[in-house]
Amino acid sequence: MNDIITTACKFVTSSIGRKILVALTGACLLLFLVGHLAGNMTIFGGSTWINNYATGLHAMPAWMLMAIRLGLLAILLIHVVLTLVLKLENVNARTHYQKEGTLKATLASRTMVLTGVMIFCFLLFHLWQLTVNGDPHDCYNHIVAAFSNPWCSVFYIVAICCLFMHVRHGLQSVFQTLGLSTRKVRPLYNIVAILFGLVVCGAFISIPVCVMLGIIK
Ligand code: HEM
Picture 1 (cartoon, rainbow, N blue to C red):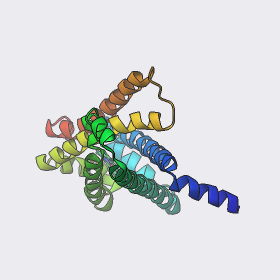
Picture 2 (picture 1 turned 90 degrees about the horizontal axis):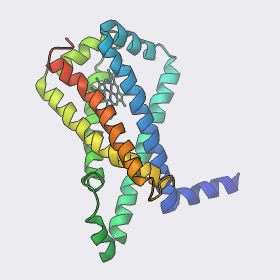
Picture 3 (picture 1 turned 180 degrees about the vertical axis):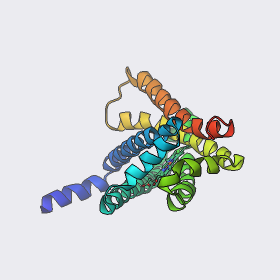
Picture 4 (picture 1 turned 90 degrees about the vertical axis):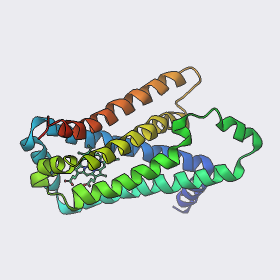
């Protein structure tokens, strides 16, 4: 038992261990995003569909819902804290050679912390707006009311564009950290990450856009 704990501590305190944890927690958050998107897409089926979906989620035992939410929160916190630790270590260990290397980095990779902070602020607002002050029985009207305010829609669209940049680079990094990426397949993973980001973020953005255009009303 002690050996397992010692190995786990060594893993978390090693740089590669932290990178793997960031990649695995990032992958879990991406899975949540796909599930959340699938649920949100039911809005295109009309109010009954999305209200049934939201009430269905809340029909599960309270302890189970709480366990899922706490699990998600723990995954998010591990992801954020370890990313910041790695970033600080990187800045401290940066040599002249590495500084030159960052010049070749993409905009998405250089702005990971910035887009991450933006997504975090968006999440706080989003949870306050649709989870704390939301009503699963009237989920459809809450979403329509929220996006009928153009400022709110624009804020969501900007935040989801940041999400695109974050996901596009994050997914590529997951492949690389987990050792799945070689020089040969890297361009393919790059395309997969861009397509995944475009489909997921484009679909999220379609909701405020359709409300503003009066397609969802
Ligand atoms: C147009 C886009 C979106 C819409 C319409 C939407 C809608 C909703 C709604 C209605 C809820 C409340 C569910 C409930 O508890 O009844 C919710 C919760 C949540 N959303 Fe979103 N969402 C959107 C985008 C996002 C994005 C981009 C993220 C992540 C970056 C996100 C993360 C969450 C989280 C973490 C929850 C809390 C889940 C829970 O209740 O336990 N959402 N969303």
